[in-house]
Length: 482
Image: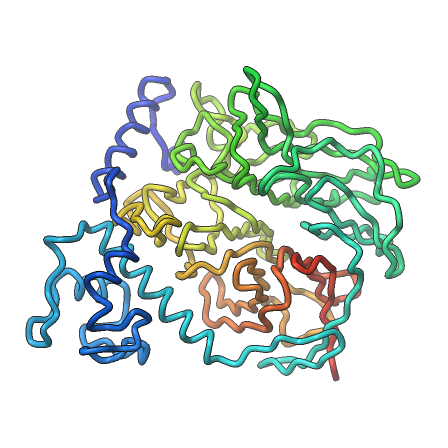
């Protein structure tokens, strides 16, 4: 187990000491319980020179992206810290902590991105309209609109589409038509906040065994309080009824929480009979570093829920043996590359720091000890964006796009998109095409914006690209225009 970046002792005491040290380092990185709202600090101390939206004042505009001391994050942080006496800019290193300076960088990135979004022309197509992208022309076609918060899409071998609705319904689209009645008998979900019925996945050997997998917010009552945690079941669909249900994963109830945030949860199979699934930190960031808890992790089990003997934490007395990776804030995208077998993940950051990660056995992805973001209220989380023993994202989106589901495209209808990664976004309401060179991101293209919160993307058996949208709620597909 030397390849695992984790405490070497298998005792509860050693693990607890390690967790305490990690949290102490996190707090020592410049984050305090009385952290200031960096937006207010900017307005009071910086806007007079730079403009409230960076448009300039007594100092030049920063929206030109011309920075005399460098345009990367490290250079901007240094400029804030050290100032520029020759230009009349004060040094803020005595007034701001390192974490607050990092938060200021995030704020500047947000303001620049907002200004750019108001000037950049990105397609906002309507049904049937042709869009010209860098590699293909395509048009939108609505598949169905009669849905309530569609969350996930999966296809059965016969071409039928399965769609989950967050309030708790599993729907079937057959020959382009949404069946009137939802599948009956599916698990009761706790539909609160971001929780409900989430991902649906079809077993790779469905033609033989008929298994369909669902992730959902499982509710319970503990000490008179309504609580929940992400759970996984599998079952079969017969005559539009959910049957033969089996529990694949359900955590101990003492880990259930009353918060309504960050459930995850995506489901992905490999080619060796394993199921990977993600659970968000449930809004309690410190839990992501606690190996005794399920949240803030990616897990790996056998397709029937048993724990594989080669999981990284098997044999540790105070760690969940299903954990594959940890330090993952809120993974809402999880996909396996169909050619390389690599596991890729997207996760929500706070304000800034949405991540694209390559998921590797036993690794720590850092949340909340390291992050490229700041808290939603404008206060810093940490000054650290990297730390030894913690994985770096392949890319991060700062400001946040609210990254969600993703899929690698391998189909016949869009040949110049083959092997590209398609990434959805909720807050920015967009679909991104990510061009890769191995494990390196070399280019991104926003294909469209502002037609709804894009929740999921899936390549259909017909080679077309299907998308689940919220607000408005519908399933659409992209069709090539020759």
